Image (cartoon, rainbow, N blue to C red; front, side):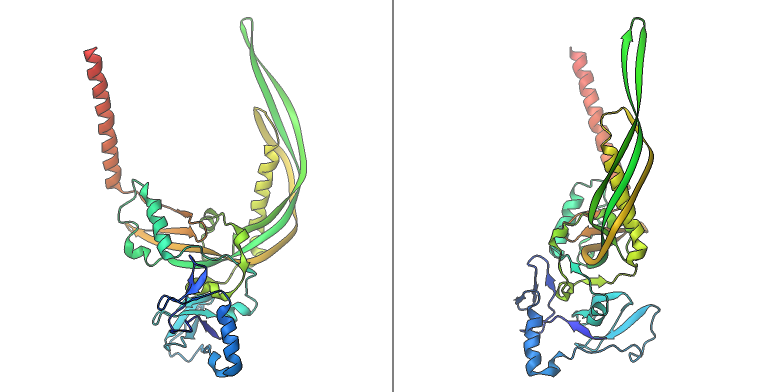
Length: 360
């Protein structure tokens, strides 16, 4: 198994992808490289020195350590340390020398995505978004998003399947329209009943469904939407400095979930055409998908795990838009504080009104 490291050609320091500048930038000497530039440099060097691209190898049994179940062991070619990952990881960092490593054969051996959506902001921008997020959360414990924790947030490229399909079929609905009027001593209500029939087709493009069993589906659904117009042809340079997992759920297994999303949207659109009625109920529907196609992409997500009062909270942050989703705890102390403040304000207002009433 070949390892692919991204190191600065000028000083040898780690060379991560800078999401703010959309280039590979050395944090040591400040050198910047466009995506694909390093490969061009290495191709030129390879013609003069074929030994320069010896990136190391895959050593499943020579490390001297027992292998954990469902893990793969690599040797860092920079410092010789052991790198152990789960069997689905395609990019990681050496925990000792901090070099960014991509398992190139993992990506090339039938696992290469069709496209990738790059991160749009780095860890500093992420911390600013989290601070803005918690500003209006009055009942959130002050220490929940600790600075030391924010500095360790991990950016991850999550595997997604993007589905395209046509949805077509029909729907019948029972509708009623009522009107009331006064006739002498009586209140009269006239109710008309209608049978509505709708048929048609819709085209769905790039419906995302996460392809990793490690990711919570509700969390990944909530962190949408992504602007998929910014998808780029896949290049491993984008992975440098981030973690990336390959898919472990096949497109066949996830197809039903994608189709359900399309069908629910189609039912809602069909029902929205019913017009102005006082009540509409679906009697029957027959909507089906056709011409289903799929492609494999990686989308950017920052994952944040927090603990409070013995309970774990997990957050996902859209690496393109900055949208933050997750469950928040409530501080009992702050809840009592704001409750007491509100009570005193209301009591004060009532007392003031009573005093004014007494004067007049």
